[in-house]
Structure formats: C-alpha cells, structure tokens
Length: 353
Ligand SMILES: NCC(=O)CCC(=O)O
Ligand SMILES: [Mg+2]
Image (tube, rainbow, N blue to C red):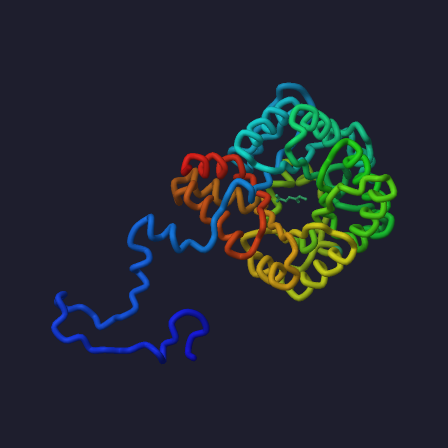
C-alpha cells in the first residue's frame, strides 16, 4: 500500500466523470478541505485539545507584603509577595488550573556559596507553600529543587575549584526537597541535572514517611539560551559565572535525553519533563513514545518573552500565537505544560466555553 493509514490509494476508483455539474471541476475524489469547511466540522475531526488540566502555572516569589514587581524581560509576569501569591492561587483555583510551581527571588544578602537558604524551612518557598495550602489545600504545588536561586554564583550546585560537585550537591538537594515536602509541597521537581538525585530524593522522602510526595524530574534539561529572562526574574542573571554545560544537556542530543529519562524513571520519578519546550518538541515526542510515562514540557521564560515581545510590537497576534504554541505541546505528546501563559490560556479556554 502506498499509504499506511486511511484510504489505500491503489484501491481508489479513479473515474473520469464527464459532464459534471461544476464547470472546470478537477477530477478529485478525495478533497481534504471538506473536513475543514466549517467550525463544527473542524471540531469533529480535531485530534488534540488543550484544556485547563494541561496547565502548570509558575509563580515568582519575593519577600515583603502586598508587593508585586514587574519582571522586565517577561511583560505581564510579576514577582509576588506571599500574600499576593495566595491571591493568584485563588485565581488558579477558579480557573481550574490544577497545579502551581513556585520560584523564589532570594534577597542577595541571603545568597551564599553553598546556597544554604535552600534548606531553611522558613525560606520564601516554604512560607508560600504553607500559606497557599492553608487557604487552598485542593490545589497542587510543585517546588523546584536546585540551588541556583540561593547561590552567590548562580549555579545549581556546590562549586569547588570551578567544578560543580555532583554527589555533595545531591546531599544538599535531598535536604532542600525535605524542607519543601515538610512544608506541604505535593510535587518535588529536581531541576539541577545532577546524576543520581532522583534516587537520593526518593529515598530521603520515603525515610521521612513522605511516601505520597511525587517527583517530577526535569529529566532532559538542556543548557539553553532560552532561560535568560528566568534568571532575570530570580535575580541570578548578573551573578551567574560561566555556563551550565557540565550538567545541563547539549542541545544537539536526543538519544542522550532518552538515557537521562530512563535513569530518572528507574530511580523513582513519577513524571518526567523536557525543558525547554517548543525548540525541543522532537524530544517530547521521543520520550512519550519510548516510555509512555506522564510527560511534561516547560515552555520557558525565553519562549514566553519572544511571543510577548512580538505581540507587544504588533508583529503577531499574541493570543493566537499563545494558544497555538500550547496546543503544539499536546500534539507532540505532552501530558501537560509549565507555562507563564497559564492564567491567560485558562481564561481564553473558559471564554470559549
Ligand atoms: N528550574 C526552572 C527554570 O530554570 C525555568 C527556566 C525558564 O523559565 O526559563
Ligand atoms: Mg539525569
């Protein structure tokens, strides 16, 4: 057969229809446009749909009260004091967004070489988890595990002689995961790309009786230029020395992504993630097809910034580009997307009924 699915071409009866009612009609039996002729018809054959269940909404936190600070490189995204984060959690609940992800802007005076604020049970993230869970226990909360918001050098791990230490870092990450889980975090999301951290964190959680805390592993996280605005948002852009290529993946590789994902699943990850998103949809597809695990993608800050900036310049229709970019993740096989557009997307989906 010439085509694998659908109507076999060889079996098609090609008939020259003399004297059709429409002058100049091409002799076409198959006209794919028929299924696109009206909105109702397009809805009937639509293969992928985006719903609010697909959304995870990342929020940036800042110390203070009743405070909202615009992130310059992410128009429409703000850093929020804990009370304001609680208000956004309420908005998420109303919009039926299932889960929030929390990222702190740590005051520079609290940053040090070891990222010790990461393991403070009263740090900004833990305060926000407690405050949100108190008012809205039904919403899911995901916490990132990595040291970059807390280190004076902006790296995700401990450094010695310019080298990011793996095993020593993992020990700190386990403590970070534990303070977050004890504060009430539902999903621990290690984003550091150290080897062996998923197994160590799972072990740490289980030994503390935190058997139900899930792990979403940033399993295939690439060293990417698209994280620029995020580093602005958490205040690590200026402090970061060098790059992260000794721990985050080379953007040239996809087989390696499968090996990384396989390891994290074997170590106990409940869900896996590919990051960034849109430039890596091929990786999302391969991961989903290979492992059939709950697979998430992160539409990162640079992807958000590109669409927002072009829209603000009138260069593209921002709302349509936003919806199309999110649907693309579903088409690639993602079960959900972390996106700074989450509340806007949810509002749009609601307005469409
Ligand atoms: N660990 C979380 C991130 O690195 C987020 C990156 C981004 O949004 O650019
Ligand atoms: Mg790994």
